[in-house]
Image 1 (cartoon, rainbow, N blue to C red):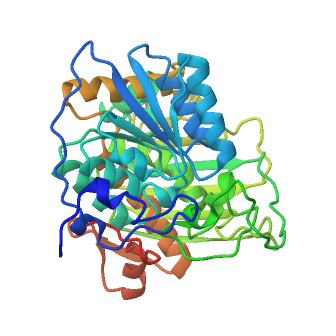
Image 2 (image 1 turned 30 degrees about the vertical axis):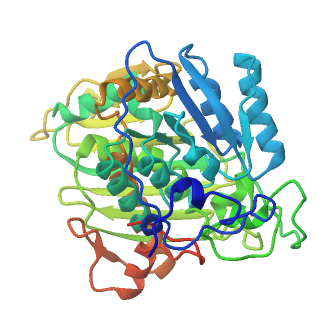
Length: 448
């Protein structure tokens, strides 16, 4: 095969912006790119670009631009309205207009950009991240890292091969109160931990309804929005924020919020899952267009403990409950942590009985640290200069969300799935292993 330069590949002969035809198959073999070894030095300007200017993309961009040394040179989005909003944020913060692209590959080609923010729907996390690593750029990528375990491993491999800094947007890792809670768990004061519980209850999220398919609006390049996902008719309830409720693009609340809360479990316990089982379905909104379960209970098995995950959409929440959280159940007490703080509950003296183990003293609620999303962004930028691994390195993001993927595979197959963590493979279940893999729409190809 004749080798072509990246610039030749990105020329008009390769694709047209108007039609945004899909990426030529075999990108990674056709383009011989050696990742740049450049390093951002202290005092240097950091040139970034944003890919995906939806809600989280604009939030990320705003925090990056709080740091004076950061300049945003480009924004990309397939939705012209979102694209204009991202450009406006840069103009308001820097009085400079960034280049605006429908096609993110124009950003990948630029050698004046040091890092990119990937804040696309989940099915578009892998390819921009991998291409950026290949071209010598560091990456801040939103959670969950990927839609499949195979995608996540490919992203880790690219970061390692090209020696890039890749931070995943699980910002609890940068929150002081989460760090304190994890340290307390690891201290052993809770005693032996056998059962953990994590959850999210979205009382504010209601029915999507079942609107008919329609013609895509002119301001959205819908074929490019689909990208490697299967070809589907356009429906207004499948795109933008609602993408997370469809298997083609995401994994529902199990990966959306599990990527945050289950990550705290993985952080504290430092064990790989052995398997998972789950039950759930569309119990709250059975006639809804949503595909992923609105109600789900998952049990993930580890060597020394089990994790129970629960989620519900459109449910009531009592005054004693929190929207998201993690409970560490130890023999000496229970530590509860969420975004508002953490505390430890223990038995009172009135419940003590002969021969009962000695309980620790309860720990009153410790308040949450503020602005830790910005701290997470700053950690990424600091690591771009030091070349040290960030607090939510891509390998961490990959391993944490595996438990969520396994739970989703179990609920879809309605059976227990057994996991080989070393080989990253489901054991003895070809149908389950198929869901570990990615199945891209041609001619898009996942570099592995």
